[in-house]
Length: 191
Image 1: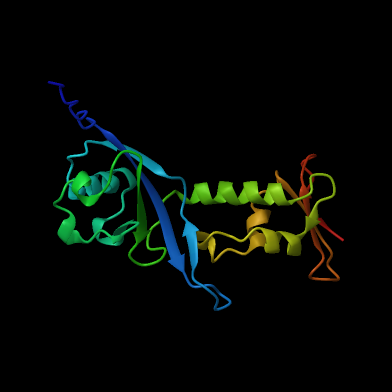
Image 2 (image 1 turned 45 degrees about the horizontal axis):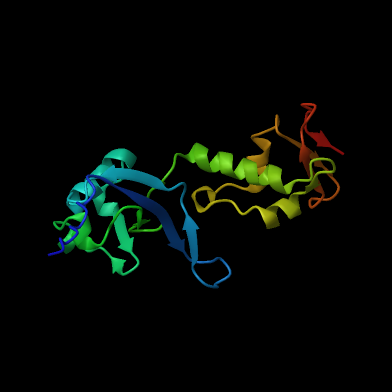
């Protein structure tokens, strides 16, 4: 009589990937915009952990109140009534992705504000010609500021980094601002 192969035991721990997104209305009245709030967070937990304990772990790591978090799977939102079930019962397995959204758009930040500043500076450098520079209008078109910085004007933001960006302003025309990478640590110029 042939022996049946037994199923492998469940893993002792699984890695859950949390992706933070927020949705907000487009300024032009178009489709709502989905915005990734930062890098994914990977947490190693036991698959038998209740979802409530998992949510508390996220709260502990990121400092976001539970009442301000909305967890989503592909099948939809994970309602609080299911939080007493373990991760496997909810449908979260190893390398499973859980989407996390604020209950109100932008009521919390996934990363510190410095993270968004660094990403914006990287995007500005990437979109500015290293030899010739580019116009401020070009950068406004190519590098939208993250929603967490919606009260900041791009020109004000660029002025925070005189060691990185050289700004040349034509005082006779308000639209003639030229931005280049500041290789020689020059001071801002008004012509």
